[in-house]
Image (cartoon, rainbow, N blue to C red; front, side, top):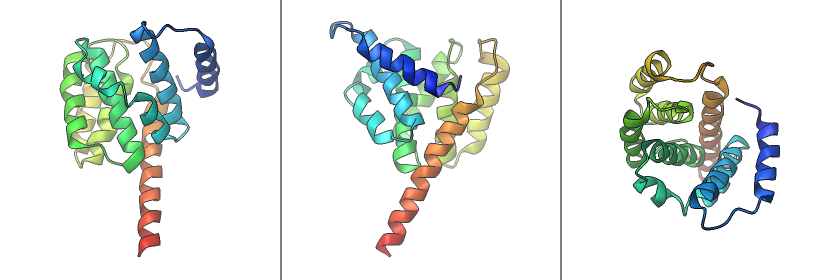
Length: 171
């Protein structure tokens, strides 16, 4: 909902809880929340470190919405690191997204797909999927939070500026 400070506070409380290593889904939820906050704070490398051991689990997950979320997280991290989603990850996200878009809470995945497609020069495809999601598939009663798009676009812009700065230093 864009309440980042409150999310940080709740995340710190979650981290203080004793979550058994045997409870893989609760542990994955904790790591995912930490990664989302790291992305919001502009630290995609930190988000990647938190999730790198989980990406294979996401890829093979039998639950489409979790598989979609994992691919969306990977796209968001790639956007933050380089300003561009890889074709492989983006294809995996789109394929999984099309299977899970009727599920609840697909806003993050939809926006990650939109920004990822833009990064690969396919803005019309992204806009079409976003429109379909908002007009047909979205199940939540409240509108799609604008901070989702803003935060991912900010990651891309920061990555682009960093890449430009690095190129200028070497020339």
